[in-house]
Length: 303
Image (cartoon, rainbow, N blue to C red; front, top):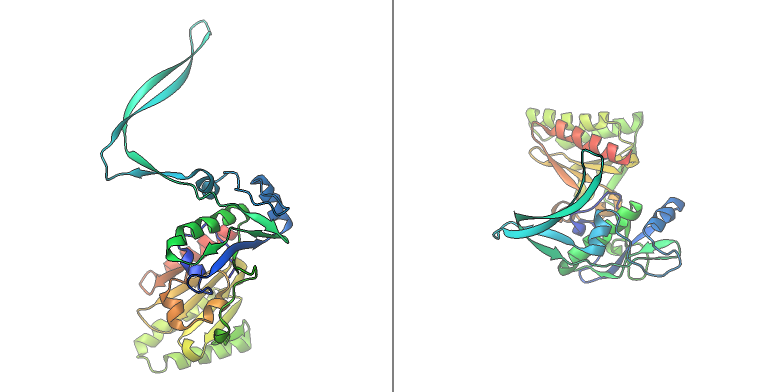
């Protein structure tokens, strides 16, 4: 799964193709523009591992650590030296300094991870990481540093190849339909069958949601079969957005970014229960409004 974001908060959702305790890399296949950006961070292109110089948030945290305020502790008196520059009536400039005292929250330094990255065969690699709960903060930092530097990354195995799902889960329980008149007819038949056992009020509500998503003009529509019957995926690959819409009332629309097809190879329980999704938009009176806000926000991010 390719991660294309400004930063991640929960790295677990991107590790579903790995076993617990498995070692892996955060990797990014480099384009010409990516290599140019790496030079700004002083990353060598010859295989030597280096800590990126701090420029923005993620690289600053990696190189220098971060101070956090301890709001649960009493404030402490702290001294600050201030410099000043004054000009008198005759135009003469005077420089000086003064000491000010102020009550401030106590602070604690989160030590820097000091992760070093290197390039090999035109691929940027993080240090070798381990898929364990105790390592999630380190994994998150590695992902965010790569996203800051080049804007995209993937999960690669310890053998330095993209991490795919286990071979016993290769059957994709979906039927893929492309936009068009014939496909819309199949879509209509699918939705009709999905709601045939519902009450009239429920039929109206479910069909209204699907029609709203169809009118957003997705590039493809994917109908769930087998264990995924009851879900429809509306794909907007141009902005890396994929919406899983339920055929049930009082449920939610599940939002995915990246390679949704890999996620679809998991069971329904794994997809919907293990935080693989980016977000959930619950079926409330503001569903269309919240969906529109998310769509416009993501469109602006990739613009």
